[in-house]
Length: 68
Ligand SMILES: [Zn+2]
View (cartoon, rainbow, N blue to C red):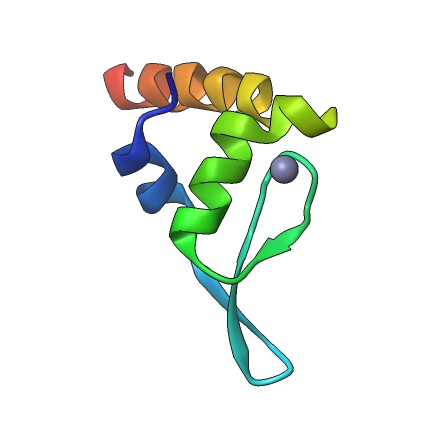
């Protein structure tokens, strides 16, 4: 499954219309909370999103970059 620590590390809050928002790097949609973003990544496939696959790929690239 997707590592919450990894999601927290790579996701920064953005201010949209004065509100904090967390953008999904997979589909570029905004979420109100980091928890909402994480459940979207984990459960989004139910609604046809493949963001989980995107994040798993991103994590493997990120881990490789730490090793080199
Ligand atoms: Zn998404």
